[in-house]
Structure formats: C-alpha cells, structure tokens
Length: 380
Ligand code: COS
Image (cartoon, rainbow, N blue to C red; front, side, top):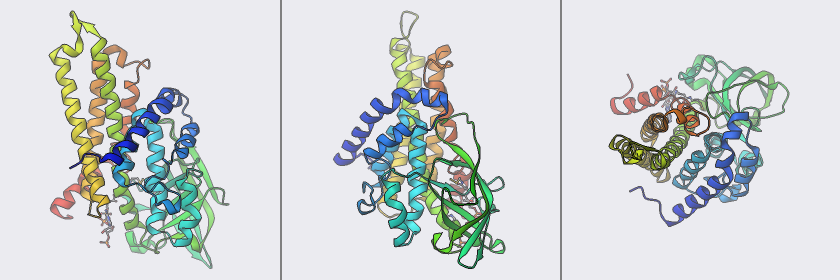
C-alpha cells in the first residue's frame, strides 16, 4: 500500500501550495545567478520543513519518513536546488548526529539545525574516495585531548553555507573501513577552510564546495559515535539519504511531465493540439506510468524505514529507478516542446540539467546496482 493517509496528504498539500507560490516563480533566477536561495530556506524553516523527521523535543516536526520525502518531492518539483539543500541538510546533516550522537551532542547541535537556524552537511567524498568510499585519505590523529585533522573533501553539498559538518576521516589506515571515524566539525574553527566553489550543470543554486583541513584541532568530545565505526554509520545514513534523492528525482520528473502536458494541450499542429496526436499522447502516458512506478518505489522504501525493516536494497532500487526515469522524462519533455524546450524560455531544459545529478550523487546508480546485486547474490 502506498497511499498517503489523511495527515500525510494534508501536509503534502500544504508544502505543494507553498512551493508553487513561493519557490517555483524564482527557481529560474536562482539557477541563472548560481545563488544560494537563503530566502527559500528561511521561509521553509518558518514552516518547520528543515527538520521534518526530527523528534519534536529536539526542535523538529516529528514526521515520519513518508511525509518527509513527500515534502522533498514537492519542493524539488518547484526547485531541485532547494530540494537538494533540504534533503542533504536533513538526511545527511542532521541524521548522523541523531543516529550516533551522545545526548549532549544532540542537545547542542540538533535543535538549531532542525529549526533551520543552522545548515548541516556531510563530508565523505574525496578526490580519491568517491564510489570507493573506503579510500578516505583525510586523517584524524589523536593528540592528547584532541584529534588533528588533515586532508580535503570535495563536492560537498551545502559546503561553505553549512555551519555543522559530519566529517569522515581515517583514524587508523591499517584497519581499512574499520579505521574510519566520524567527527562533528563546526564552521569557523582554525584549520578548517573552504576551497573552490563548483560551477555545475544543474542544481546550480545549491552550493557545492571543497573543504580543506590543515592541522585542524577537533576536541575529543566531537567524535561522532565510536572510533572506527564511521564507515558503517555513513552507509546507514546514505541508505536513508538515497530515499530523499529518489524523491527529489520524482519531483523533477513530475515538473517535466506537467510542463509537457500543458504544452501539448495548447500547441496546435496539423489542425489539433499535439496532445491529441497519438505519438505525443503515448509519450505522456509512458511518463505518467514511470512517475507513478517511481513514486511507489520511493514510498515503499520510506515505509520500510518507518516500520523498522531493512530498506537498503529498496532505497537503492528507488534511487536507481527514479533518477533514471527523471532523466528520461526530462529529455522527452524537451522533445515534446521541440525547439522551445531547448531554450531557457521554458523550464524543461533546467529539469534535464537538474535531473542528471540524481543519477550521480548519494552514490552513483552503478553503486546502487552493486548494492542491489549484492543483496540478491551476496558479495563477490
Ligand atoms: N548498512 C550498514 N552497514 C553497512 C552497509 C549498510 N548499508 N553497507 C556496508 N556496511 C558495512 C559492512 O557490513 C561492512 O562491515 P563489516 O566489515 O563489519 O561486515 C563495512 O560496512 C564495509 O562494507 P563493504 O565491505 O561492503 O565495503 P566496500 O568497500 O565493499 O563498499 C560500497 C561498499 C561500495 C557499497 C560503498 O563504498 C558505497 O556505498 N560507495 C558509494 C559511496 C557514496 O554513496 N557516496 C556518495 C557521496 S557521500 S554524500
């Protein structure tokens, strides 16, 4: 079953109306300027959208995952950049602390993050540790009551704008994945700086930056979870985050489909609207099927998570399918709009540019297929 209940549906509707009125009209401008949409983030914080699945006692909205990912879909439909900021902030900025933090860490960091007063980010990827996440070369060496962090991270979503970072570093290179540890690192501490800002194909209003650590002293109490458990904790966080990105992909696909549908009703060729020509109506029918199938996969993974079942394989399936169909649907939407679709006068070219990243980040779709095949066949 994956029909939203009354409460989930009414929250989805509130977010959809808000996103259509407040976010969508400016999405093209944010994209053009490559400017972090703080205005959107402040408004979303006011509505309680920056910490939806966080318990109320920690400043969140206390929703389930299904409601949270339905909101990501609606925000992403209006603006995929804002959807990326929200999803990454919540799923990978807050969740590592919620899952693994001590009570003191939770109280210190989560309320400001969940209320959107601060932004969170997650720093795993490095120049030589992408799909092979275990190849982390950033080191954290214990020195008295501190760890000293050295190295760099790349492609960090919310990098530079975020205040709180979960950083994965090697505390013992000889131990492989079991020598990786997570740390909470605050913006502004000595030895922590930002490198180049990436200029991207899509989600251009979201910030993506390099992080640089040069003899950065981290107090011992900022270790997140247990030393050596950072890698498996990161995998758990990423499983959840992949449902968010899958939902972002569904939102982009829905936006592209609706743009193509509207255009097909008004564009007249050969004496009738193109939507009444079978060649176009069948394309629209295929889009509708693919979006519904993707949405159901995403909600299924979210429901498994909410009910406490294992959902790693299903999250990977949802992300793979939803991101692949988002790219296909955005391409087909451009095809339906023809020459107009190829211009910046219409939003469909942006949808294609935004959709592409969903096949890449939070684990490429090749990695998702690896996760799925390992779940079916075992590791080989
Ligand atoms: N949940 C909990 N634990 C997990 C896990 C999961 N989903 N996936 C792996 N682990 C644990 C394993 O159980 C293993 O622990 P033990 O040694 O105690 O058994 C440990 O983590 C190492 O796992 P594994 O041997 O499978 O690691 P690999 O190096 O073979 O790689 C992949 C695993 C490829 C799946 C991982 O590197 C990956 O997900 N890469 C993509 C990274 C990514 O998504 N990056 C996106 C950017 S970060 S926002």
